Image (tube, rainbow, N blue to C red; front, side, top):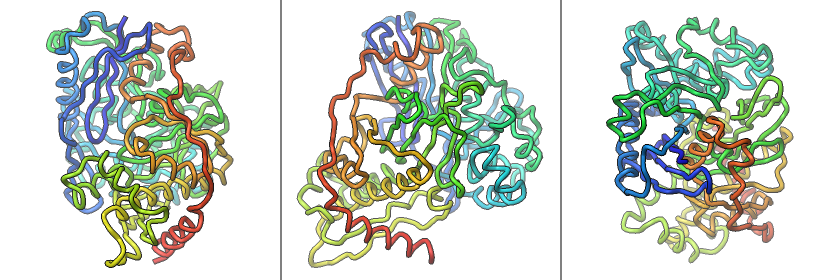
Length: 492
């Protein structure tokens, strides 16, 4: 029995077909071949076309089918992971009304800040576990205020994964996990937030039908099935944001377990059973994939926007002829601490852990007689690791104190230098796994379809491929120097 997993990322859409019995990947593909563009009409804006996501999804599925390594008719369930916090708007005919305002768009920061004050900070934090901030609800409020002709046509406001599931099935559904990441959900009343919906003047009809994360979100339409070579009636049985899904893919489901990723953005995501929140909403709390009102499972999320995006920029500007593997090797030529070169990797919009400030990316202390390309690459990797430490210290102040962090051996964790720097500066052991968002989505589909008797069964073959232990705190002085530079920028 096979499972199809889809990961709607910012850079590309990845698709994997997984054998449910062995949990091994039978085939995988991604689209586009180059990184998908982010549309920035104004400074601080970030949009993508939902139609492009759907096009990429179909092409990636067809590429998998063309491997000939499986019978597409044997796919029993579909799971979807997606970039969090994006806003997709459709009319009654399910036509997209505008580009998606995606996770790193900063235009709604002021709107969310005003809502935080108007609703009341204590009320927001106790009921939403977050400030309305720059999340999906505030993005929708921006459309209402600035594009009233589009707002008037909205039938449903959705997250990116809700949209892709709708394209497969014709049904618009969402989940408590999705509503919480959009800051539409009240954790005290277990309902749509009357505070948010009332303050912004939203009609509840805009919200799709709410279903469990692990449940049927509709079945594959005949026309779509025929086009993609799949079996009509195949159910979509799982939808989750990319970070909860990354945690699922690493079997991070219970209180105290922690996952990390260093892709386009950088995230540390820990599971808690407490309705906890950061007083300044610098780290955020959402319903995890296995959350229920009876058994709270909350995902405490630290997000750094400029991680893989910072490294990609570095490659494009300084190392265009080199691969990431070559860059990682070159970084090893420079000494620890990069001989005083410091990088603040915050050039991808408003940073939540910096109180939604936009400070930009910075290079400090460049010495034209000392610093080489190797220093620059190493300083970027160290700056990203320092940003993780800064955020993890905030999480520790809120009671999340991991001794082990699980991560997939991909993206920046492919760099031995970055991984060891991350481990040393956080003082936390990292267990590396062969994991993938699309594979996690496929396993989630198996859980939702009841193919696995329990989540534990879905991960019975999962084992760490590498364990990286701290070697010391030789970078502590460099980190403190970096932190002083950051705090100087925050007070400017």
